[in-house]
Image (tube, rainbow, N blue to C red; front, side, top):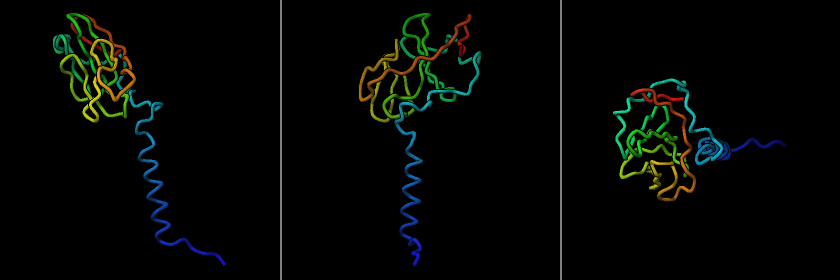
Length: 135
């Protein structure tokens, strides 16, 4: 005699499967959430748009560009290494994640305030004249 699954069994199984798929990338250190489909050579900004001692977030390109001191430009992934949230501000010498309060130094992407314990991955940029481009 064969038993058909109950409606409850089907709903629980389907819900569990959806939850597993939906959360599979959350916090996955091996995911490539910092990658971007934007091509090398794409201009991000003019150098005058990046404040000295601060920075600017390019959400679509998943990049944060900072200028720690006059004429020195750095770029990092805008994805927090704690649990994959996108950072939302640059102020007070740090790149800031709103999800759990992680902060990263604008000079090298290192952790300034946990819970993150890994630095933001560096991104390659090219400064040509007054133009900042993805490398």
